[in-house]
Image (cartoon, rainbow, N blue to C red; front, side, top):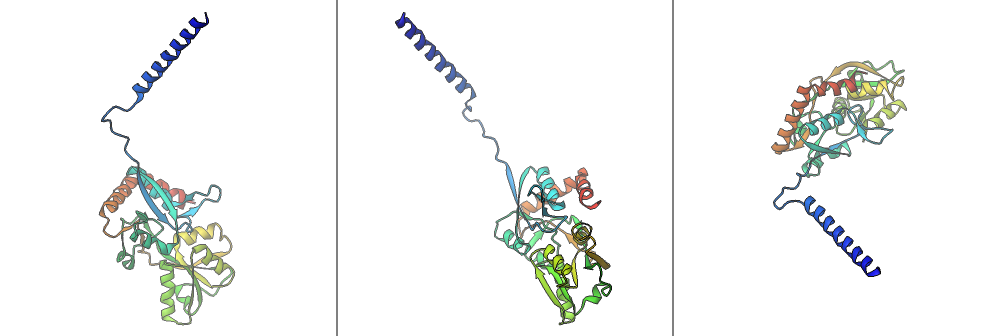
Length: 266
């Protein structure tokens, strides 16, 4: 009986191995079958201290904002997995030039100076500058009142450039440059500067959020023809075409308008 039991056990083991082998054979890839296509990755750089365009969500730690939603929508429309990293604003163009990233999106104004270094997508947002002062300031009424004063601005921005023009007009003007616009606003609030010249949309958002009752806007929007674009390495026509096509798709589908309302209808 023991011998018979052993024979039955061996037979059952052999049957199990054959069955498993058959299943494995059925699920194995067939000769010549194509492997799944690798997901295309779009490497993006931004400077995530410029709400509501790009910022870090305090609750989740994720990068969020108008620009972040837009570039993700463009990537999805074009079949790309979007990977975003944050760096200093003055590091964005060098990152493109060194092939560290494919594109930059960071409320970058399309200027003649920047066009010498990189290419830009079709414009996606109309900008413009505004002057911000402390809420209790009654002396400063407009940009022209700032000559000879102490100003704060973010490095590499057109607001910083506008501040430097005032310094050319009046050498007594002091321009304090900061790595992020939030630091410039804090300098204003503590009295280290009398004004911040910066993009209207960003300054208006700050005035309604963290800067509520601390700052106010004075004068009119100037350089109102300023427009933002997505940066691409100079000569990279393939990526530039892909971004422009994706931007057009996002606008045509109505998703662009939805993203805009999400961030600018508050």
